[in-house]
Image (cartoon, rainbow, N blue to C red; front, side, top):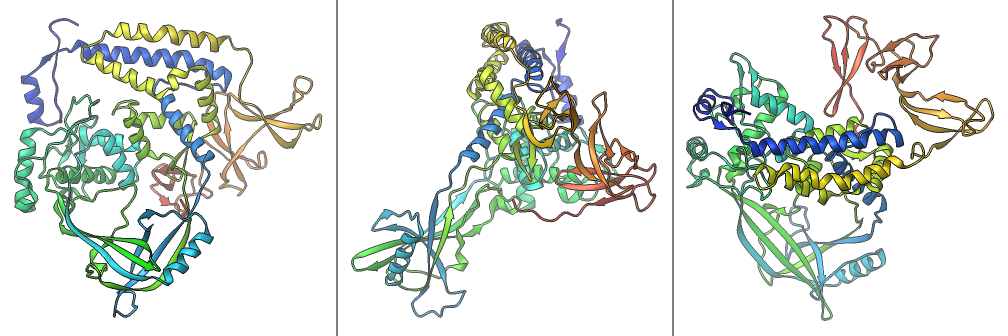
Length: 607
């Protein structure tokens, strides 16, 4: 790099930003160059060195990676937690109460949850104890012991980082992290708007910062005051703290022009681009607004009998002032169960209450949930695995390698993924250690800050890594994935054939090899043939390319490179292919010039 080279930086693709960047170039930051160099060398050392060993020991064509392997471990560890989880029984007991003198109508009855016995927290773990408590409750006298009223403030969330954008798009828009990244890139580079051409709509979309330009934040306050009312605009801009480990190289993700409201763009641009832009726009606007205000009421009720008492709690909340929620609703993984205050009667301390009924419900503790795109991105960020630009690709790569699969929206490891993870943990423990991976990311950040030399970083990493490589390379034997015995008989010697995995997928082999060398192809049935109605099998050509053919061959010669729909196009008679987009499946005609496309209706499934 010579002294004649300079770099320009801009956070958004607009004339103003580009011109300003051209007027203020900076020197090449060699610390950032060295950090990227170190990252590339590390990733290639891990990937290029381990992948051939994996391919030899497990299955041809496998890969490992400094970051993807750590992410796979998180998914496999969660699966093992779920598998080993033992549910514990507990009982939830509710008193259905009403004010003295009120008629027992649905509108007058309110629920109070059992909380304690004589001031001690109560946990009921079997039906026998639950029924004893129920019988005791039916003989109690009830009164309001305490009423607490308050006004609470709920602050808005910060504007989006890459991670929080991917999480929220998964929750609210049902977009995968990969799809969100691609659509966001389109919004940053420029999206076609009907009647206007191509325009960039948002700032740079790979960022870990919640910082907003002071000038833009002040402009936002004026915009909010004018369009929503002065009470929605704080006196000074809201400022959010960026995380300690954040690089903070770019602003938070925000709209370039607040006058380009979602309403003004609806129906004039790509549907997914519009949905994501609306989410980004509304999240940013909310982040610059005043807090929401709520009335809250917590009521403690006592049920007494023969000197013993049970404590019950009922909570309620209602909106006093919408604040930022006027434009943005907060999504939460665990919704609150507070009742709206409007559904609770006006209660006073020492007021007598009548018991209408008792509800006992058996419940069981639940295992941790599998990761989905939103929770995995959040976990990757919290554990310091990867960077904003890599979260989506991490999830995508391990899925393409068939280490994971989607079950509904959840990400589950495959048998292959678990085998890869177990092998990596035994042979390359550092690579699978989340703390080690996070420390490496921290060390790379130090290189970027000029606090560490990249050659020293690589030099400290490689000697120990090389020892693990040598040990793994010297291990004798073929695939460590044990063959799975089947009930299919070998037609040459009569033994039960075993299922093995080869370069082109699974196959059946005789266990008496080399005495008996009989093998059979395993064909995965994936649909119905549009030509004869028979089963369609997923097959692999000699060059490793997947194709689909009728299992009734040679009677039926149907073949397709795309997964076919079970019937031909009703418009032109050509083959239709199956196309999956997010959580929807379509049949799309492959005929030249035919635009037939239909949504496949599926039966609803339980999560």
